[in-house]
Structure formats: C-alpha cells, structure tokens
Length: 235
Length: 302
Image (cartoon, rainbow over all chains, first blue to last red; front, side, top):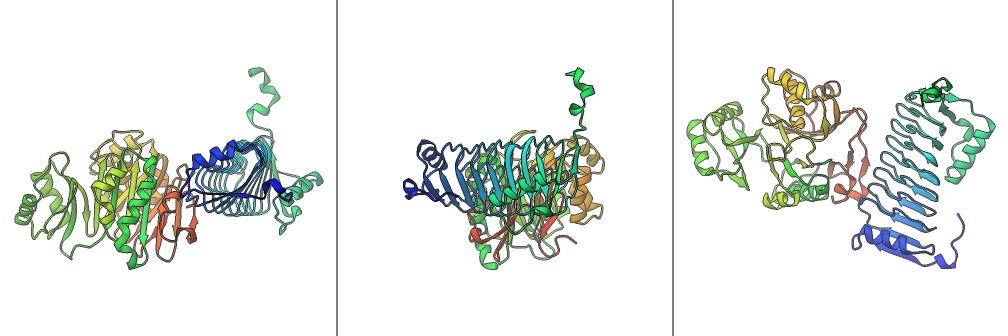
C-alpha cells in the first residue's frame, strides 16, 4: 500500500451513533479528493460506505450489516469486524478488506478489485463473479462461485457443497477440502501460470502463511448446454 | 422478509432485563417486519398441578375478572388475570387440555395463544414499535424469550396470522421464510387431528412440529423432519420451557446470526439486533449452518 501523502494526513472521523449512514455516504461521494475516513459505531448497519468513486481509505471499527462497500470504485475499505450479506457486491475496483468473517454472497457480481476476508465467508461467496478477485483466509460456505464468470476465488481453508456450480471462466483455488463440486465444475491442472497468479493474489492479500503450491485449481468443464457448439443453431 | 429475535439468559442477573433487551432487538428488526409483532416469554412457572394460559380478547374488551371467576368455579383455583393490552394470563389449577376444551365451549370468542407451565405469548397486528409500547414488553422478565416481526407475503395481516405460533404445551415457533407445500401438508395434518386457526404457512410448520411431538418424536427429531417434509425457505426458532432451538433450510435462503457471551445466547435475523445487547462487541458470533439443529437449554433436545 502506498504511503499516505500529505493531503491524506487528516483523518476524518465519523461516528454512526450520531450521524446517519446516508450522511456518511454523501460525504464520501461529495469528496473529490482522496480522504482518509474512520467510521466508528457501525452497529451492524446496512449500506455503509457504498458507491464510493474516489481513492478514499475508509476504516470501519466494528461489525457492519448488509452491502458494505457495495459498488466500490477505487477506494480501500477496511472492516475491523464481521460483515453481513453482500459485502463488496458489484465492486468495480479498489479493495475491501474484512478482518472478521463475511456473511453470504460476498463480492456478488463484483467486476473488479480485490476482496480479502481474513475469517470465513459463508454461502454463495463470489456468486456470479464478473472479474474481481476474492481471497478468503478461512473457509467458504455452500454454492460459492455459483455461475462465476471471470476473476478468481482463493480459499485457504475448505469449501462447502456445490462449489462452482454452473461455472463460466472464473478460476477457483482451494487449499483445503471441497465438500462437493457443483454441476460442470471439475478439478484442473495447476500449471506454472496458476501458481504465479495465486502467489500474486496471496501477496496482495497479505497472506503469507500458506504456499501457492498447496492449492488445487477448479474450473468449468465447459460441458453445459450452452457450451456445446452443436446447440449453436438453437440460439 | 420477517425478523426473528431470541434471547436466552445464562446469568440470573439478566433475567429482570429480558423484556428490555428483547424490545430493543425487536425495534432493530422493525423494518424487516412492519405488519405485526409478537413475543413468547418463559417466566414464573406455574405450580405443579396448575397450568398457565395466555388469552387474547380480540376486538371486544372482555371482562377478564369475570372470566377468571368462571374458570375458578368450573375448573379449579385461578389466579387474578395479568392483563397486557388485549391479552391476559391466568394460572389455573387444572390440566391444560381441560382448560382448552372448557374455553372452546364457553368462550369461543377468546383465542388461546399459549398453554403450558411458563410460556406467555403476546402478539398483535401493527407496527412493532407500537406493539412494544402497548404491551410494555420492556417490563417483562423471564429466563428466555423469542420475538418476531412480520412482513406478510402469503396470507392476511391479523393477530391470528402473527407469530409466535403455539406448537404445544410450552412450545412455540417463529419463522422467517415461506413454505410452498403448506396447503397439502395442512390437509394431511387436519386428518391427523391438528387444528389450524388460519391459512398461514408458518402455522403449518407449527402444526407439523405439534404432530411429530405428539407421535413421540423428540424436538430435535421433529425439527430434522422439517428438512424432509417442508418445502420452502425458512429460518425457524422454536422456544421450549428450557431454552430454544434454531434450524435453517438446507440452502440457507434466510439470514440468521447467533452470538454468545458468558451472560446470554442470542439469535437474530441480522447482527444489528444483537449489537444492542450488553457486551455484544465481545460476543462470539457465527452463522448457523444450513440444515443443522442448534439448541440451548438442558433438556430441550432429549
């Protein structure tokens, strides 16, 4: 992470016990120059720090509710706690770091950027992923990477049932046990390019206790109906 | 969308504030269920040989004192009514089945909300904040309690359609989700002699548990039966005299979070309802796994 420059020295502190989430988000949207913002007393509230479109650095002290840092663009959002459903959903770029665990549908439909979850992520992590990278230090729940199209999901722990069901071209890396693969998801060979990609992702996520060569790779078998060239005429 | 809240006290010191904490949890869940609200409190057990009943007087304000005198004359010693808004609680020296059949015959206008030793159920259509105020929920003490806020999706908004649903003596159910095979299951359960007050899907889940328990299943077995026999989405919380149990459907469509400290165990639809509890920031919290029965209380799951 680059050292904060002079314009970012001042840290704006926002207390959600006295200011509304809407006010916080409005400030983040109105600030054209990158800001450093510290948010306290999130108390599980929804939609904290959504829709940011600047390279802000936002730190949230505590647990947040649904859709935290949704649609994030450019900003770095760090949650010092757990997240509810849909953290970093539809993220476009930037990074979201969760120091605790994340609930369902983390990084749903995210197009770019990086989500790091240092605890576990529950069901449907990286569902419909469209290009972002997701690194989970713990385990993920069932139906993770469902219909994931592009990007990578890295799981240092275990994966639940139906991993990668109806997967498109996202890459899945799992270090621990996989309870079961979803339809059309298969294990694939871990080639040098994959070890390299994975090593870079782990480095960006600041996870250094695991080795990229300990992971297995999973991807699409490309056998579902719409992958068959014989079916082309029916479109 | 609905909201579920449950709080189980591990230390007696917290019991006096049970209602206060549950009220705050319900307020946090108001936006998940603005149509109606309800609670089940477990408190102040009736002496052996007596049972406790919760009655709802619907629109007409019944003369609770006179009803108490009738109960005493017909069945046995009856406590003075403890009235809370449209509801009243009596302790009657009689078998709960006798009280139930006597009420059905002599006061069909009254609705029996719960029966058992320690359970009390209060529920009403309307905003949760209004419910909390009218019923003075924050004043109720007890060992544990469940609450619900309802956003109706498949049947009418009335007090009868509100949660918790009684599922037998000292048992109740709150539900977030929707069931798709409830009509067929209700017909089957009616043939088994289970009574229903409404066309509500959650009441069928409650009736299903009642039936399974009547047939000799443990609460854990009855809940596991839900996984096979109920089609739909659900997070259930089931209260009993000893504690509560939680079950989510096998694909965990509906949210649930649990948290525990040395003082309490809580379940809620969202963390924000747990954040209002004392010591929440240091609680151990987790999402219950799909299709797995969790329970608190010593003899809850035999």
